Length: 245
Image (cartoon, rainbow, N blue to C red; front, side):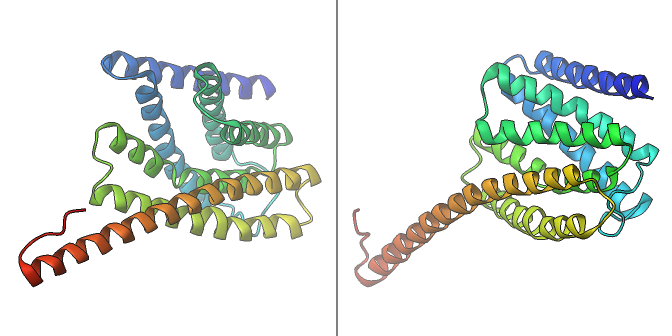
């Protein structure tokens, strides 16, 4: 069983490395980060779809069956995701592209998935955490691509930012709090699984503070820009001349 799991994770890692190499070959005029972001976007969309299917259709329901035995589909998805996180953590360390918080997130994710695979249980809630963690990932990558291509300061960029903040707050913080509560009150999960859940939720709050600070600064900037436009419009209406700032 352990050998089979290791082979699945190894195949997953090789798959993500191959996809990254392909993107690098197809986007020679772009940076290495561009190709890595494409891999991240691909994993995000794939993991959202698979984890949503497990949570909402295949089951079991994570809010009522925390600590239940892993299903075969859960094991496959966790192995697929573990291979990705190993790839991405290695990439981030090699290129020194991320700070301690993101490295801590990836490390906790890897340890959490390994723990669920070794125990043969708690894949239900780990899968739910995967869904909550990845639900905002495509928006984060789209935001980066908009910046790189010079299209971020637009209506599309504003919509992406709004959806990202709303989903992060509602799902990772709001729904995540309920999931953590269900995990803590359930007698089934191991105590160290619960500790891991608390650690992951704490990391989400660290991200949340940064996101809210960004959203506040952007909102203030938008408000001042709107006030300035209104002032110019009134000036033009009254005397036909724009006020020179």
